[in-house]
Image (cartoon, helix red, strand yellow):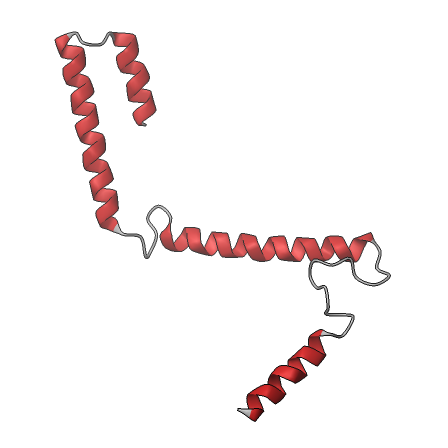
Amino acid sequence: MTDILVILSSLQDFFSDPEWRLWPFGPGYGQTLLPNLARLAFVALLMGAILLFLRILFGPKGFLRDHELDREAEEELRREREELDRQLKDGEINEAEYELKMRSLK
């Protein structure tokens, strides 16, 4: 238990150093605009990499995407198109409404 407290206190001392106190969001000490912009770009790059990684894993045709959800969505789309075809055939909607609703389904 005392080892953990020693480690935590040494981390506290390390991050209390003026160089690390406000990183990455603080203005720093005596820095110009360029280091601050570089720091902001670095954080934006990290966020972009994380989002891209999640998109690859869980996005369309992703490795970890649940294919059951895709199948259910395709079935629902097919049912909605069949319902629109039936409404057009029965005269419940006109051709313009049909085209508008079909475009919204895509």
